[in-house]
Image (tube, rainbow, N blue to C red):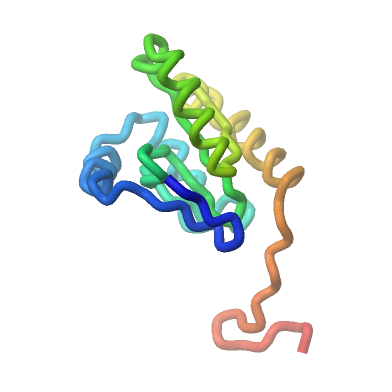
Length: 142
């Protein structure tokens, strides 16, 4: 699959869309808890997608503006280290940055997980341009 670095668009296998929906409907507790921290721009104003098809893969969470994917590794990942490394290598070749957390970290140490993501964003973010309007009013920059 190709990645267009100029627009940030990554092609994906359209057959993955249905499976992606199934994964969203059958998320682990760790994924649900992390999604509650990421959704609706709660993570420093950045938008994340959940169970996003990218290339031949589906990633747990993805932020296009940061080219960042976040994975929550559960019990099944303990037996797939070779496959996970190949998958991660393919995704890095598409220009993606990857953060990994375990299911247990997301369940029991969410403050540490959130802070780790915030630190990564603070160190790697691209400035978000200010919006000219806030709820129908002009901003103070006018």
